[in-house]
Length: 271
Image (cartoon, rainbow, N blue to C red; front, side, top):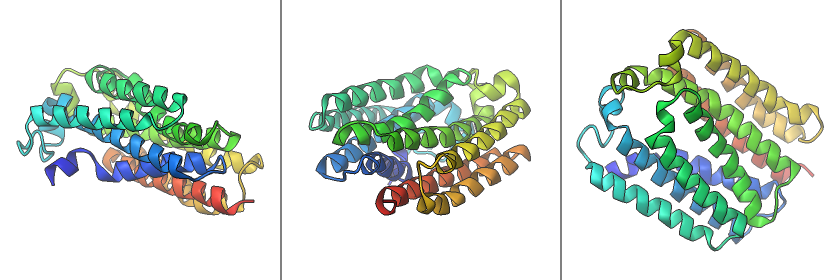
């Protein structure tokens, strides 16, 4: 159970379907799309484990019940698990076109760099992780051919929703980050200013969600389902403004899930 917890299974489900929707928006769902989804999930699982490996001191304060700070899993086991999963994800990518292999290797390196270096820096770490949400969609598109206009927009939507979530997560973890010497945004700016940025980015995400519909790219099915994502981003902004970063980031997680469902509706139902 602890091994399962360290890889964040809900996040793996999200990245699997985000990758698949990238393929679907290019008009193809086949074995390559499934392989890409499994590869992306495996790489992310490894990234989650190595993040906990590097974050153990911070998590002793911010998340003491997690497997590493609670002593349920050793650091060595977490490191081995992370490297095996990322290597597996890369190896699986060799069944896909060359662009997918490049993305798989680059994503794995970025996850390691994020955990070891970027997570300790203001904004750089937040942007790097948010960009991986976009590249999960692009990964699925490249698996079945090439990027389409719809898959590009889907990646932009995913990344834009994910960015404020990373800001609010840093605010939530600021006590542990400060104690471990990190210079994340809420520590450099203070939590109030970081919250204002998170709220602004929630508003930006709401705008980005509706923009492809207003531009005629996405249809009625998309906007009907994505309204849920729109509302959840708005609720995240309200809770972030009121000083509840944990609640805000959870709303954004479900906003991302609702956005993926809306994109599935677009790919399947919109002719």
